[in-house]
Image 1: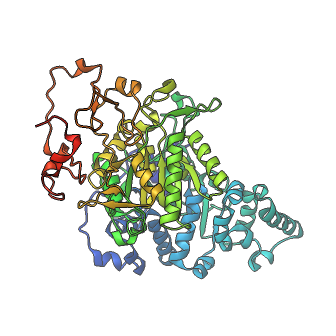
Image 2: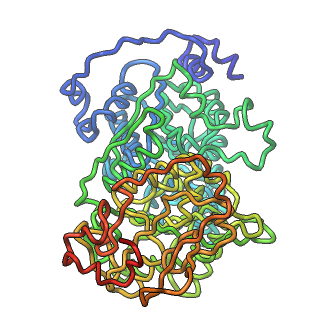
Amino acid sequence: MPSTLSLQDTNQGRLLRALLAREFEVDDDVEEWDASAVERIHPLMRLLNRKQQETAKILLEEGCKFVFQQAPPGVGKTHVASVVVAIMLSIVTNVKVAVITAANLPLAKLARELEEVLGSPEMERSGAVAFFSGYAKDKYFGMINELRQHMLVTKLKSEEVLRNLGNSDMKEIDQYCENFERRPRLTNECKMGSLLAELSRLRIVFATSSMAEAMVNSSLLDTSVLIFDEATQGSFTELAHLICRLPKLEKVLVTGDQHQLGVHLQNLPKCLHYGFGLESMVEQLVLSTLVKHTRLTVCYRMHPLLVEVVSYASYESHGENIEAGRGEDERALLTTSRFPLPMQNCPIVLLNIVGTCRQDIISHSLTNDEQTASAIQLISSLYDKVSPNISVVVICLYLFQKECIQKEFEKLNWNVLVVSVDGYQAQECDVVVLVTTRSSNRSGGLGDSSDFLRDDCRATVALSRAKHGLFLVGDIETLRGGKVWSRFIDRASDFTMVVGQEYLNVLRSGSCKRDRFGQLLSASGRVVANFVDEVVPQQQQQQQPSTSGMVRNETWRRDGPSTSGAEDWKRQAPNVWQQWQGTTFVRTDQMQQCYKCGGHGHIARECMENNYGTWRKDSWRGRGK
């Protein structure tokens, strides 16, 4: 059917030829940007930045338009869609807009955004209606009920509808309203939506892609503009089906991020993953030269340092970048609080907790008890040092880890949201505690590298949900096995330091201090940094336990009687020294760390912060001269 319709000389045919990457006449002339001319299109254009205006300008031009908008996390893609809809309602006659998303929560967010742009009275006059599945109304009732004024349960009771109802229709409406309040999963949204479409003129329809498929001949009839948001999680066949069933369609805006999670196909045979239209529509659109491409770059979600680190980790390797749209003072919930960050001006905490993986015998998913305990300690300290009402979410890579943390929170009577990465795409939170589970401890063969760590899209989603601060809990060396994880850790290390168990001890004690470089120290002056940048053979990691104070994968031993009156400890040489034979190692000044102040680039006897010469009286210097 798509191939047949694409042969027609209609707007629908042109859109399908673009979707299928079949040639049609395209205007490739690049116009010089005129900001004043763009703002003259409509006053609402002033609400958009330059990149956002490019998308809106293309869609508002005369004729058939197909636009794909590449939108990294937090760049305001929902805001763009809302402004475009508002402008079209005011300047285009007889327009009907269908706003589609792959999931219910992004749909609710988009409806709320449009209400803010239009105003609630104007949105109601425009004939907007939002359809949600029974599952969504049951699970997210509190959030969705905020849009009750624009939902079917309210629209069916309007005077315009009631004037034209028969007795049988009235009974069905009463039954629907009763089910909405008591049994949301039993509401027949599609049937009641068809009834509303017959009795009322709908100019804006909000629906998920699965519901839209059942409404193309009723509520979505006569749609001229299609906006598909969060399209990365929508399949190519879903978009093709909608375009084929909407003959009056003239303009299409698809918004998504090719570097985030796509359609979940793991339950299907691998032979069906590609070539059958089940993969994300974005994969096809980014390759089509017949689709207009725009790209948003200004992130309004995250703290500027988080933006810089995520940009380096996930986007710069693809020739893209994102830049901060918020100042540090607008995302200062953690950095200006009493919470002791390793570097107080950096809202990123790299917590190196190795632990041991444990597997669920039924689901075969994994959990890490040491990382669970660390997450609980972090949240306890956030409640104590920041606020008991702080908005915090725990994101887990493994479902068993999620279940274990949820059980611990229930025991503590804490109302903390614990989610999987897949379940939290398109959402955000003030503070995120990200628990990665995997470790280099190979107990039971569970410490091997994971596909989750090598999945760059999953890593991008996990690392980009936080607005004010991110706590990354995991085995840092294991995480370096993933490209995005490794790049994130490398760039974050430019602004903060990796910490370990000693950092949790500082949080428990509630007392700390800082050196002249701003690095966090315990009350006794002990450095909380956890140095994991040196290469340790895996065989040594397996055979030798970590020290409790620094959580490092190495063993220390006493070598003979002490001649200095103190405990002399030396690192045991690895048994696999042969692999380093013929290799020259160079120690730079940056690798030196002062025992006294914790700073880099000098040693204790060169430290200017302490009295010169006192190091010679210390018993720890041994027999060195």
